[in-house]
Amino acid sequence: MVIETKREKILVVLALITLAIYLSPLFILQENAHIRVHDNLDSNLAWYKVLARSGEMFGLVNANIPQIINGTLPRNAFGTEYSIIVWLYKLFPTMIAYALSQALTRIVAFFGMYWLLKKHFLPEEKWLFLQIGAALAFALTPFWPSGMLSTLGMPLALWALLTIRNGEGTWKEYLVLTLLPLYASIVLGFFFFLTAMGLFWLTDCLRGKGWNLRFLFAIVYMTVIFMLVEYRLVSSFLVTGEPNSRDEYFHAELSFWRAARLALKNFLLGHTHVMTVHTLFILPATIIAIYFVFFKKLWKQEKLFVFLFLVNILLSIWYAFWFYEGWLPLTKRFHFLDTFNFARYHFLRPLVIYAGFALALKVISLQGLGWAKTAKWIAVFQILFLCLFNDEIIYRQKPTVKQFYAEALFEEINDHIALPKEEYRVASIGIHPAIAQYNGFYTLDTYNNFYPLSYKHQFRKIIEKELAKNKTIRKYFDQWGGRCYIFTAQLGKRYMIKKDSKRHLKNLELHTDVFKEMGGRYIFAALPIDNAEQNQLALDKVFVSKTSAWKIYLYKTL
Image (cartoon, rainbow, N blue to C red; front, side, top):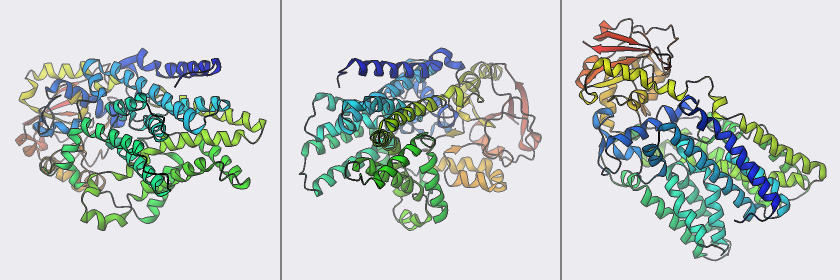
């Protein structure tokens, strides 16, 4: 797409400057920046580092990662080596890689949504402000970092596919369809996008618009590229191996009314992995636009807007009712309904909500000059509001990256133990095992949702008495188990006990003999264990540092 006017150029430059300011804390502060912990610092960022030094970047599909859970973690659990994000963390320090990934994702998100609106949804020049405003807002959404372009790349893919569908496709559109799979995940977004596109093509056929083989080929082409890039995932899904932790994942447990409440909550507030921050400005704008469409009978003129509004509602209902207990008969018969998360069709919502937002602002603008000004201000307020969701603001009470991984502190621990790390195994209590993994320790605990079920059952023996005392963690471990942690009944699902905590672990009951049989020698505890001797543990030394968020009580097995 070519920038055609001076006004367009100015607005695009202002949007890019806004993105640069938004991203600047990551580049300026680097390790002193505050970023998301959940499904980020506690997992993916450590995984990239573990993979980079494992020697298994190009490992066979049946290879394992030696550093984690006694070398039983499949190499395939860490994704494909053909993903650009893996190479960013291989080639650059963690926070440089993180900042570059954020910048790449948000810039592509901006231009993808802008081109989609300009070409297909709001093609007239008079809507330029709304095109760029909605695109910038979309690019500022607090997406899940390791999802990359899995959701934020959808507008760019839709732009390419719709252009091809209209018979205007060139090498540029196919280049987009080729490159996007290198920086996106099929299970975190594009499986759902591509199946939706397949339904779109089928609908065209049923409506008498012909077979449109160009459009079908483009959908199939992108799917094939994803299959080639994600060959490890395809292999894990299609080739039957030993049972894995996902085989004990059960999702269908909500009553009808709990599912209905979840649907309403998702519609109003969104979801942590696809945060849209749409409640305060976008939702009222959408309702106002729906009011005008209804009372002025604009259904025909605004059918795309109405369609996106209905799809948004249906996606929230689908997401919530995927967890409805009524699925149980089917999940018992077809096991893949438990192992594959079909609820993720709601990952289409950022695309649907922000494209719908632009169309809603158009509907409002058409109601008169005053309403047109209001629409522009709504776009501006949404952008300003999203700026308040900058990681440095939202997570300012959390540890910085440097404080979280505490490399200097764990180097002290390593020097104190004075053994090659591969000769012993550790586990953590009160902190995420990703911290030990990031610092090179070989851990018996981990956070992964794809590892041998036999290992989960073996590890469970260590904590079975603690699980018996606390229903919440027992259900959490037994019916999911992605967090293969040393859970305690006292702490429950708390695993960020900071160094200023005054708490003690009391009445801990571990099967330390099983821990030792598995190679465990040390426990990194974030708080003192009052009955350590009863658990065949001895306090070796306490470690604390100004640059660490944790105080580590190093316990050694007796």
